Length: 317
Ligand SMILES: NC(=O)c1ccc[n+]([C@@H]2O[C@H](COP(=O)([O-])OP(=O)(O)OC[C@H]3O[C@@H](n4cnc5c(N)ncnc54)[C@H](OP(=O)(O)O)[C@@H]3O)[C@@H](O)[C@H]2O)c1
Image (cartoon, rainbow, N blue to C red):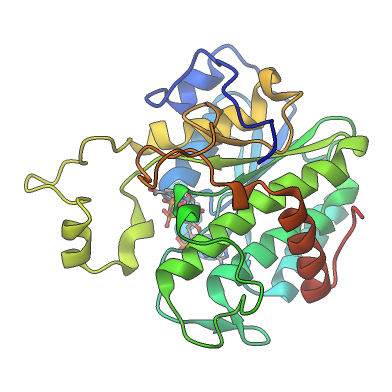
């Protein structure tokens, strides 16, 4: 465990909202890219950044749905993007490179959770393929990441508690488990931030990983109702259970990590509740914290190398 995982005291907390985190900040003239920024947490992240004046590009695999969700959000624009399709990631990035506009913030937010076994591209497992999509996206976009100040925020999860990297079978070819596939992808998101920050710091690119908290969103759609009841996610009156956040609260840590000057010297950190997370002392995901395998620099370097080999893109090494 690196020594960067200690609270720094942001003045915000678990119940802060994205709007509160950005209050008083003027992001006019800044551009943010939010993958999946039209559903659940991504929608609230987009709303908050745009509300503070930023132009927000939303990468959407359902552009029509994104257009409808963002109709009333000023300065938000939608670009079709399927992160599980490397050719599509290249095309989407190429369009942004052609425009030549500097990108100040990338929020690698898109995710799927515990979906049925899905193979994409050359037989890649879908959760891991989404990590590879974000890896390729950020590497393709390196030429337009704002010089001297771009931030990349990888949306991870306390779901990483369930698995480190499965180096001998990252694509689950020897048997699929949707929860372990989600867990590995969320560990990968955290490790991605660790190594990107290491490689990008000299060029002013900093990266952070965040656990947003537990929030009821469309992410849970692959989890059967009985399982959600057993997990305590569903209450008889349909209200979120104790300890769950609203989507606006769930969007806060990513928004904070994208903008807070307090994090300038904490690149690579895994954050939760609008602060740097402490090392996990429990397996309770509602309590959170970060497990050692998600912030291990050697694991991060190994994942970066593998991701570069699989996608054929590495613009930072
Ligand atoms: N909700 C929670 O409690 C929680 C907890 C911890 C971490 N997280 C993380 O937070 C992030 C956002 O989740 P959420 O809860 O807001 O879920 P969500 O509402 O389902 O949003 C996920 C977004 O990712 C998009 N997406 C999925 N696959 C994609 C692909 N191949 N290419 C492009 N976009 C794709 C989805 O598009 P479609 O709408 O077309 O499916 C959707 O817009 C995820 O990374 C998730 O792991 C959430």
